[in-house]
Length: 95
Image 1 (cartoon, rainbow, N blue to C red):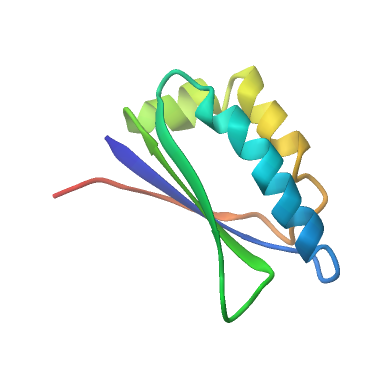
Image 2: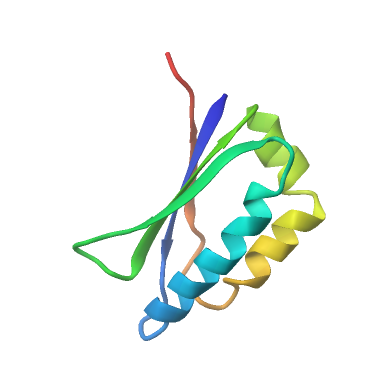
């Protein structure tokens, strides 16, 4: 199992739109057959920062299967144009 952590920062003035887009879009992530779980949280100190953390069956399940499939485009369609810069995305595994 691999946990993906992605940090998105809203464009100023788009904080609530990004929050709602994340809520709508996370369903697309959850529908992928190799997604074990998908969650989103909002930063308390900086309300325009959001953390998405998803657990996948493998690194490739996320980076190859999901990102190259139609569910990725669906996910991003809900948040495109609402976040500044590229999100920070890292993958973690138990050790």
